[in-house]
Image (spheres, helix red, strand yellow):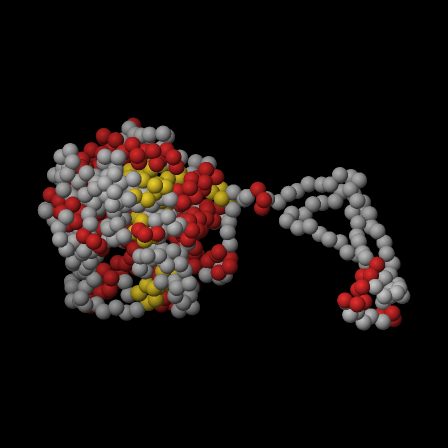
Length: 560
């Protein structure tokens, strides 16, 4: 560790978290923890506009990039489905509100539809947690280059300004955008989601650069124009896997695992929560790869000092989406063709002894939740943390077979509780999916929600799953308080309570009596010279007897 630290390879946050949890035995990490979150903990549910709203051409809504792609043949979405109707929440608001009221959640995270508010370019004490942009860019803006166009920074700021001014009297919890890492890589690197651009070596970095500056600009707009009068908070929702070195004793795997955290979560979190710039490991890695490719400068853009000052500290809390944990091994990847993926110089693999899910390479690894939260605490200065997405997928046909899924919900939440109570992490809120919805890469194949939606029924009926009942109880109890039948009982018996010991004559008495049934059925062969005359005594204990928790003690005191 010391040599790696001297070389600047492994920041102290990774070191401290791995050192803390690597010695942990499997039994220890599976140990259930009882306790409660803080009284003001924000229990909630989440959704996003395109995934649930439907009404894609109602009331003058413009087309988003998802409307265009999903309505064309060859979209790549399973079964060629789209979000034209989805859960039809645009027309079934009362039904959604009923679900929220029945669950008695404290918060509801949802996103605004940019293309509904700009077509071309409060209820029951539930705190709205609003995501301003969740991947549904208006198609007109994509036509001018989308997030590869630097003009998007000011265009996005205008949109945010409008949202702050229009809804800020009711919304106190803002997230400028959701999972920008996923948008940059899947939308502009692999082309798996709109706008389906495949420029893996340059476009993801260019897009991320503009997204970070757009977020920071919008944050300062709120700070300068609205914070004093509205009193809200602004952040950004980042997706984060937890990763661990496959072999803690291999230095290159240690460095690779830390690099994995920096290339994913650190890509956006490091500029925003630390120093306004990309992680050093990321900058060095991309620069070396770029030089090997014969380029005169890094494919990773650089921020000016003015931009670093603009970006640094532009979040009032840390919002994180978390689903899985993987193992990392160092590899030396080819430097050509250029790709964000090959810049990593590591490969990920599943933790094979953890439960599988229907989505490949996404096992349910609950212990990673606690470790990720500890890493955020150590790496980013102990911020308030809100878990803004967490759930487990189930196949559509297993909608109500939820025993395993509820168990996984329970263990993920309990790991967050351990981080809060045992590790001192400032976990302030948790949200899971309100209902099944359109899943970007998977259409309607899988359900993540607490409520089942029958997508074959035009009325889109909502039915609570068993997980909804489970989550209701967790929120009601504010965690997992120790059950009554598990609680330790402390107290004293009355003063004249008789404490004694007991024996039975056959068990201790010298064998000089006639035969009885025990001689017939218990073939004892004890000669009289091996058994001393017993001294039988009854013991009365003086003073007050103490009651011990969970155990009853049988005292057998004999002198042979």
